[in-house]
Length: 213
Image 1 (spheres, rainbow, N blue to C red):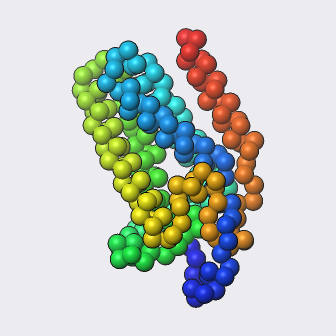
Image 2: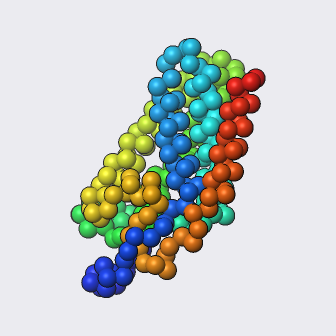
Image 3: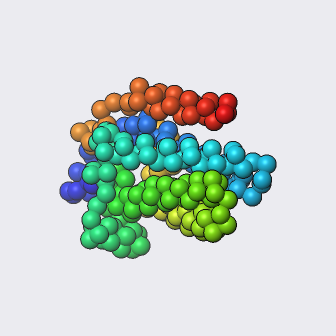
């Protein structure tokens, strides 16, 4: 979070690398898998693809949780997950149109991220159970959770757009480039290309195994 007099803040802020490559890749791959799973949800001929897309989302969520523990500064949960008091204060100020600027994820975004990761695992778990057992109630539970996840995604997108407008900073572009406004000493040291490549290789291996079995 940036503090201090506004003039000094603006003078010291510049575009720095905030989100490393593994964070950005896992984010956009989850977006792609979510869209694909939604498109294939109602078609029986795409059922296997729907399941594999869901499993891929679960793997990405598991990786993001792992990376949230050992990853770079702004990827770690301990750096951006705030307590209820600070989160509520941020939401109140956001509704008033003057939220404080955070170099990494803001408190509201942190809540959305944690909720979406948890919901991804829950949706996938019940989807796997429904796919394996053919139990109708499990399929219905999976569908209800998926609809709740769609609502969460909508709130997350709305929050990102609102934050972009209020901070005059394109948060969608920032999640593509990894760069946001911040102080030089807040920058992520390395883009972590090797970790991103290992993640992609593991996903490719998973898809290959699913394809040949």
